[in-house]
Amino acid sequence: MSIRAPAVLAAILLVPVVASAAEPSPPPTVDEMRIVLGRRLFHEADLSLDGTLSCATCHEQKRGFADGNRTHPGIHGHPGRRNVPGLANVGRLRNLTWADDRLGSLERQALNPMTGTDPIEMGIGGHEAEVVERLAGDPCYRRLFAAAFPDGGGRPTMAAVTSAVAAFERTLISTDTAWDRAERAGAPLADPAAERGRAVFAAKGCATCHVPPLFTDDAFHVVRRSFAGETDVGLAAVTGATADRFAFRTPGLRDVALTAPYWHDGRAETPSQAFDLHDADGVRADLTAADRADLTAFLAALTDETLTRAERFSPPPLACPLP
Image (cartoon, rainbow, N blue to C red; front, side, top):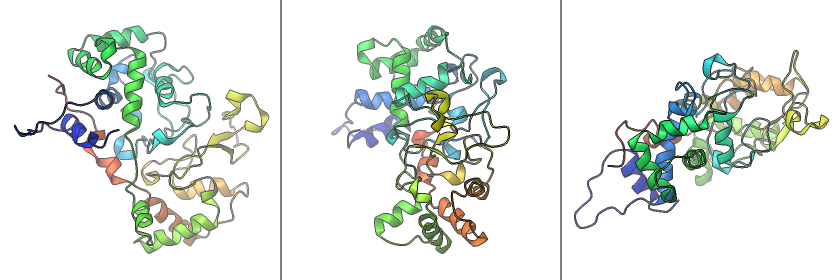
């Protein structure tokens, strides 16, 4: 994104800006218009078969772009399979789901909840042409697609849809947590409990997998071999490898105080319960009550209120941003 992009995008994404006659704002670039379109599509329920689900239905900004449920049902009540992950810095990740290493790009991942069948989420697999026609019937979308994909003549396509959604998701950048500010200043965290928690986080080996600054190593690990009644074998369902049974991607911890419940199936309602799931197989040394409290305070220091409150990530105004 260009240096001038934030100012240009603010003019389009938020409210009309009156430019001075002497120095009019430059027109937005194609890349900037893809972000504008992607924001609208991210919040567009017509991308689901029955018009009830958008990307933002499950990825709520105020919840760190998670949704607060163990799993989220798809259209017609189809049961969800895994916990909805947050999206902070998703554009910097290689592995984009809990247990599938094949997607490789945000564009491919964006298509997965729309057309996937295990589980059925937005449910448009086999109905893509119908969804494209819905978008093509909206004059605002025709103008936005023409501006964002000028070679397409304003005609929506699924490739353009996923490209625009991915462009928007790449702007979901988290760099303004209490931890970030302390790191930039070379100072301890202002909250003494959080600072103690930072030491516990390092001493207990949490940072081995939850590697700063993303607080994930973006890799798959077997933390527990199984739970009672466990049927989700994780990465092994894709690779077929015995070694991958119950391997799941290390989740990032930015905004983790907002993204409960935790674990791939949402079985941990609190950070302390998530700590227990690690400890049960001896992966981590036992934590004292003080350790748990301090670790929880440290995790709260990874909350980025810029990401979770900024208007540029919220549902766009109903009015079309292009005349």
